[in-house]
Length: 424
Image 1 (cartoon, rainbow, N blue to C red):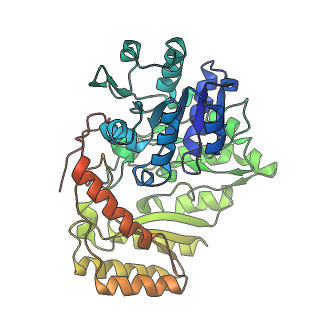
Image 2: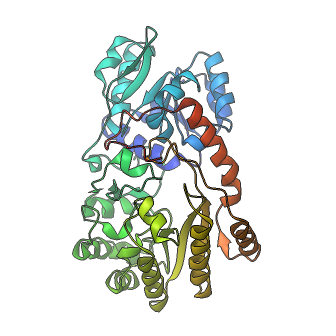
Image 3: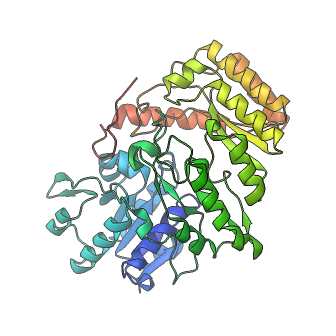
């Protein structure tokens, strides 16, 4: 019976598919691992170690009960993901995990599992030599440093021996450093890209070719500029796969594009080389002052120009907004309403989200602003008409939980690739 289990979920599926590919490519036999989304299967198997990965907003679900049941059976629990990275002490002392993986896990996980197998799945001093871990040893909190995999493309995006697939991560890192977002502070400000030949090679397993990137149009760039020739080279290289019957979705779920990168030249590339006629962009606010406050860099005019270009070239714009931002006035919310109305009047879609303070970001300790009566009525009315998507309603309560969590258990980020300055 395998001694290691991976607790997969809908939300951590992509991450674990990639990590399993990395494990296999380093010589780890995946036949030694139970890989399942069925917790009952793990409980029945009684593995020695169970691997988890989760976001902070998931800690109030079934996680607590699963941890309790596994601990009763003596399993060693390893946590990864954004919550473990940003709040390792909470992950260990409050959630009940034994080890937190801090940083990019491709190399850490292989070394960790190799050492644990040799030491009988116990926490010993041998773990001190593995960069990227947090744990308690003899009652003392230990942090071995942040693990970064500069050349993440050394590892395949999925395993060969197990029939698992996910959208391929083609870019890691983001240069913009938006204050509400965990990505740049954990994965770095410089974009790192998977080479084109690899992307083509690994895309062969997908029927619908989709990719993970914080800004799809920035492929091949350090991040803040457009490298049109690199972008075209990637899209052009994927065309033989389209001719074999695969469809290429680029700049839409599970990625998006920055509004200032939406210009006639980039849209023409999609018309020539991709199948989607829907593009997701982040506006986040209709107030230039709020965009500046959150370090978005772009302005409202870039959003409007992007929407107009998309409509001109036959694309449906899907525009994301965050409401309830820190220090957001009623006037700022009114400006967001006006921009949402402007988008919808032209045939675009709006996705609304309520601000959630996330650990490890400059806005982690910032309080959400209450929604004005005008904003509440507007969102409710538009949602009833099917013109606004998003989970802003449910996110209000989740935001309150996050705020209480951070007030009680806030940890100064000590493990990020980029220093995090609290700006609240």
